[in-house]
Length: 355
Image (cartoon, rainbow, N blue to C red; front, side):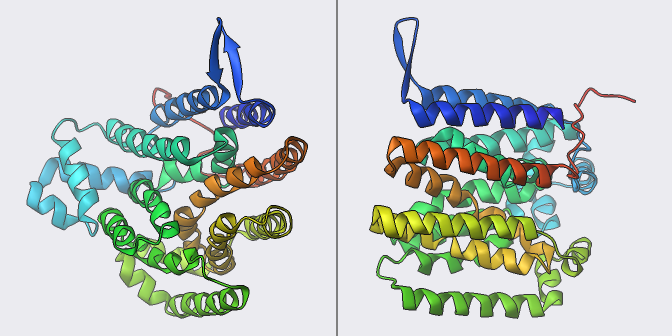
């Protein structure tokens, strides 16, 4: 647990620096705090992920069996047909041509996908450390360690957020189609597109929420349909147990606070539109309290929060921003503790650890 606590505390300290200053002078050179924050957090988390033990994470054993099957028994055509997500099968086959070491395979998948996500954060976030604090608090590190195929899909899908705001449906669909090659559940994310419409008024937003809840309800009611969609019986257990009340409470509080700032103080139409994209988060989390399989759907939608929150903080005056960062830090610390205390990646074990 300590390795996770250390990076979380480092990130909180960096949040304080970014809230107070933009640049620092090192050896007579002016260096952006944003760059320092990015490289410290990125390198730490990259090393942490690459050096982790191959059995750290809930799905490790099934991935290892699959990878060895591809390495030993399958040619290229067989590999891409062997897996329901042919993009993932292709990646497995390519890496297996170079090594049979499952640890290397996991390291490559994590290294590439985490780097893509980090580049996205660096490109679009106005406060790097706050974005990574949300990344850690929402449990995305645990997710990146565990669900290999979905993390690839997420690293592709997040680049489609800008097309929601820019109202470029075709480009958004192309991004989703590419991500679906690695994990088909991303196809459900087409539902996010209407939430980026700048013309949406409050009454229309209510109608959208009702429709979304209804659509989710239909999917949930057919638990067997979801199992068939995944085509893996080992996921069926997730349909009968709920989780995430703490996370739901956090989402609701965060949404209400951000909405207060955006609607009453900032009066920023662009931020109002971006804030609409938090609504599906809350709706999905409501369902996840009963059917925890839906928790995995949140990993598509929560990354937008990594950009939205820094956008709003940047619009505030310095003193208000400091206060908000402090409040956010306290809330995320509590969420971090709840998320990681019993996580399947705790305790952290390195690849070289032997009993």
